[in-house]
Image 1: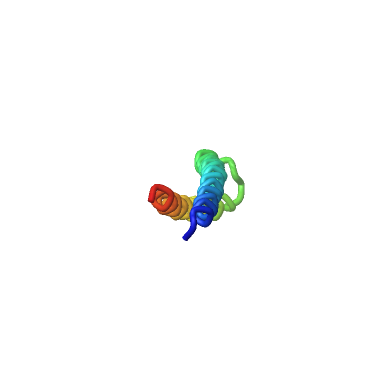
Image 2 (image 1 turned 90 degrees about the vertical axis):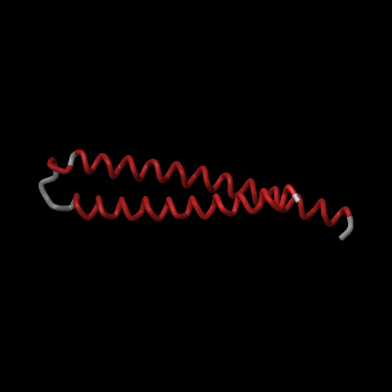
Length: 87
């Protein structure tokens, strides 16, 4: 590889790293909002006249687990890209 090809490759890695960092931030905010909404429903479950709160609580927990898994996957991608960038 020539020096220009290496520079282009490093630039691509840096762009992907920035993309994953921004995606991580966005998913983290969504996770916090989902957990906040789920906790709010849990704390006010007695105020609902119908039993709609229980499926919403379960859905909120499963969605939070999904976002948490996505965040972990993105963290692993960020670690791999940082390794490539250091090499």
